[in-house]
Length: 125
Image (cartoon, rainbow, N blue to C red; front, top):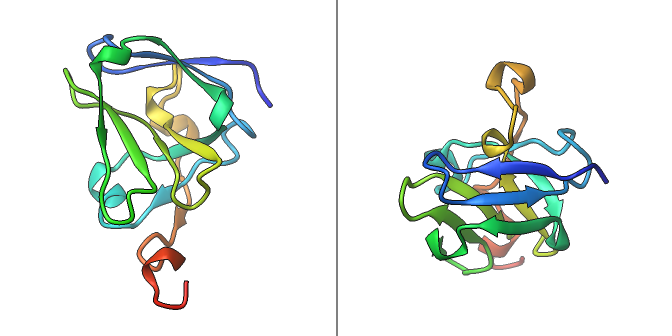
């Protein structure tokens, strides 16, 4: 695991301390109906790897479908901060671009994963 990295929303109301599972090697985009509209790539952190330092009261939760994934946003500026993953409920996905010092040109291209055909959405899954 890596050293903690600060993550903030746009308005500064929310600040996280994030310890990534494998640095930026886990960066990915998802093409499910929600993530492709949200647009921000995510990196992986274990459940104990995300701590809200400031602004817990400013976070709002969005969940849909199976309600396994729980997406947390700043209620003031709307920035996606992190979510409990449906693909692996034992980890968080964290907004790659909310991490301090990360610029898109430093990490692009970010690979895509198939969220449209998630096993939880199939009758055999």
